[in-house]
Image (cartoon, rainbow, N blue to C red; front, side, top):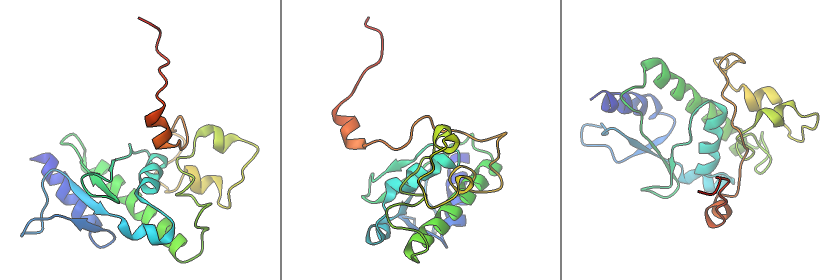
Amino acid sequence: RVAMLNANYIAKRLEKTYKILYRGENGQCAHEFILDLSYLKKHGLNETDVAKRLADYGFHSPTTSWPVHFSLMIEPTESESKEECDRLVEAFEAIHAEIQEVIDGKADQENNVLRNAPHTAEMIASDDWPFPYSRKKAAFPVPSIHNGNKFWPSVSRVDNVAGDRNLVCSCETV
């Protein structure tokens, strides 16, 4: 029941910013909900950009494009506190503002904080910073994220299809 409560709480908080699919007659969802991000395609963005950007906010990327293409399936568990649910909402609202920057032409369609996400510690610390946005915007996008609680992704974006087709096992042979 707590997972359902968490999902409905987050969905309700996000419904003014994102289109939420498949709600019941009473407007509620089950233990998960789906964000429709199909509108991003016409602006040069996609659901993977949002999923990868969530890592910069300290969240594991949600399920993308399943069961609906161009969507994210959000599944908060029963162990998530209200504070953690609020933190996720804060991240999605900030990401929506980043999306709007691209839509409004304030950020480049290709070279933006979403398309380049996630940002690793190595990228942030590098002398070379080839991006048109600040390191702070990349790594510390909201005030609630600071050095004391920052999760650093270990790798930046990889080609998902190439990775799926060319698995490399670094395990010792058994």
